[in-house]
Amino acid sequence: GVSLRLKFKTLDSRPTPRTGPAWAAVATALALDPEQAEIGPYSLTGCIVEGDRLGRRLGWPTVNLRPDGELLPLEGVYATQVGFLEGADAAGTLDSVTNVGRRPTVDGSRRRVVESHILDFDRDVYGARIELFFHQRLRDEMLFPSVSDLSAQIGRDAQASREYFALLRRSQGNTGPG
Image (cartoon, rainbow, N blue to C red; front, side, top):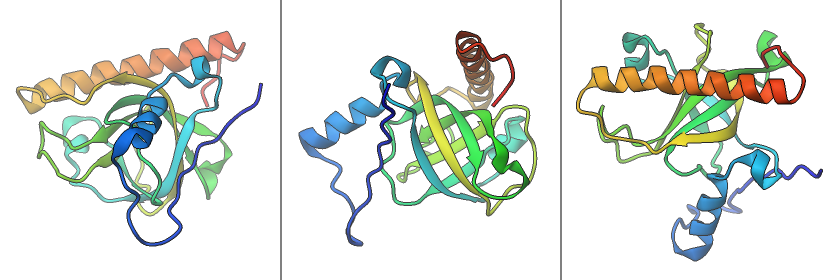
């Protein structure tokens, strides 16, 4: 099959309009399962920046991606993979779970954030450039009654992502990570 890589960049410094039927069609398409849609996973590239470290305090350290001006997928939680673009980790991808959204339980930020918990990984990688591959949308972003309820759901999301990649590897005849 043919692999299609979707990238959207603006030609000047003006923000890309994010309204209208064309925008809705693209946002809907990005929520599709890439394997069912017969396209490769959508990806974002950017730099890891410092966050407020709440994920670490909850036991779910995250990397916070500052995307290179690319179109963000629909708000929600995704099974993803992180590929480091430089350094010792550049050889492969690491399984992760990613939230794209406004963090309604924590601070209800007006700006959208992209934060990923890399499974079985806990290192300081601030400043690193990564490519984040979106494989499967797991659920909508939600408001939880408490931060402890949010933490429990992150655990379920991490497990769902782990199971997704294990199944994907088995279907491809590969049992190793990345």
